[in-house]
Length: 291
Image (cartoon, rainbow, N blue to C red; front, side, top):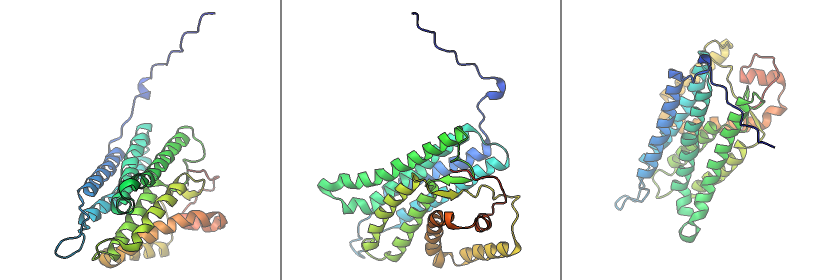
């Protein structure tokens, strides 16, 4: 029997042309740029004790951590800007995932290897350090791929909830925790025993990113969102305290915020629907979807 000719792919109509929206993708480009700068600063860092003072110059690492956290801010706004303007597109989703893999996958994994694993696993055991760092990167890539597939197929896992811990939050936790540990050991030759906490956190976050634990996406929060007067006052006081006392409390507040979000996924199923709606500012009564 003759083989059937391959089916022809229909040519796209004019209305199906690739759409690239300027402002959302500009934020995504900022995210990618921050990830690249973070990588360059990690490479430039010379983490050797000064011959005179005996202290390590952590400044390049601090700059890298700041750019990872700045990438989190860009990532927070790119999707929100797209949704507010009704400009979500397949291109934006794919571009965002590629940027996320660099800023929140490659950069944090390379950071932890450069700061801790490089010194822990030396000589013939050096491969173990690279392997531990690569686990985080692989799990982050799988999590992004799973999210994109669920989004394209309109399945639970890309809606109001995130399925698995979001990779930007994982990178934010790694970056803020590293900043906190550096702050504690800034005048020492190394990070001390606290430094060994980073690889453990990295492995745990790897498992959480590909887990089935659900986290709120807070996508309903926007310019048109309403809230109570008390919440506005508390939020304003919190932002004001960060701006005024940033040098004193920022190192402690950031890891606490990311850790609270991580733990919230575990206690969330045990909360009543009213409590969850109050915490997540969700006024939608439709059934929840996963991310």
